[in-house]
Image (cartoon, rainbow, N blue to C red):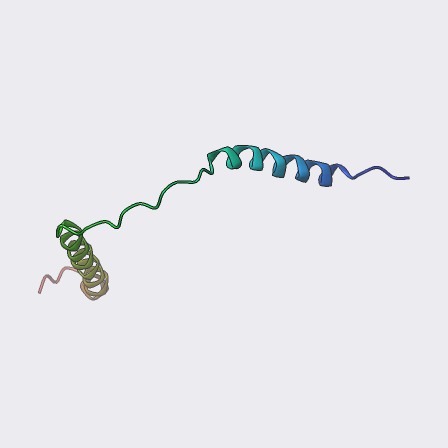
Length: 73
C-alpha cells in the first residue's frame, strides 16, 4: 500500500498546530456590559466623515487644477 502523501501530512500538522494555539485561548466568559456613549465616539465619527468628504473633494478638484498648467484661478 502507498503511504500518505507528504502534502496531506503537512496539512494535518499545520491544522493541529493551529488548533493547539487557538483552543487554549478560548475561554467561557460572562458577557460584557453594553458600552455607553459619552459623545466622544459620535464626535470622532463626524470627524472621520468630514475628513473623508475633504479627501474626496481634494481628489475631485485636483485633476481640474492639474489639467491647466500655471493657472491658479
